[in-house]
Length: 245
Figure 1 (spheres, helix red, strand yellow):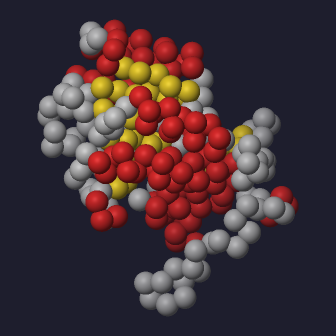
Figure 2 (tube, helix red, strand yellow):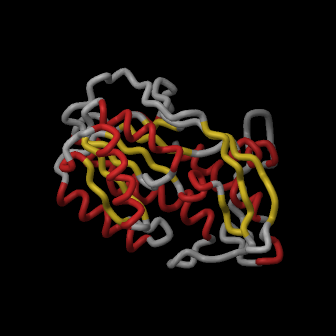
């Protein structure tokens, strides 16, 4: 978890989810599996009472997120859940309501497709119109929580390489669109969830001098598909997330 706090510095006081990405095998379906060993997610922040605070959680249908959501709900937070699948989001909402017995008005479900900047912008506009206050945001990318990345090159709706588009660009865009609203309340706390796959990309990056690493920004989109290595692309997208946070 990479919390973004005022001034752009990373704070390690907040712990919600820790995951380690491990490469498994390439399947016949063209999917490269990353098995994520995730510790039971808990909200360990200083705020025992979250009553009156609104918390956005993207990709909220992921199994590892359940305990986090329940924990936040029990502390009094109003939750905004997102998923590309409205039915799955509704099921996740129902599970929270059954587990906590809180009012249904405290858990909102919204559709958000992270492979489309149009969807992200529409979602952000709708959210800002409906919520004058947003206190916290937990941003998770699809592959980070499912552990599955594409085995073949494919584009997002706007033509970005899929891993970079859904893991990094979508997180960056959504953060920038919501930044001012978070800042209005003096909170600006965003938890960006990535995996330890970032360390692999960081280690393999060329080092110019001591303490200086060359970012792999040449051929960002991997337009030459013969050079496309799913594992490397996924690791790079996770590293960019880490750098962003």
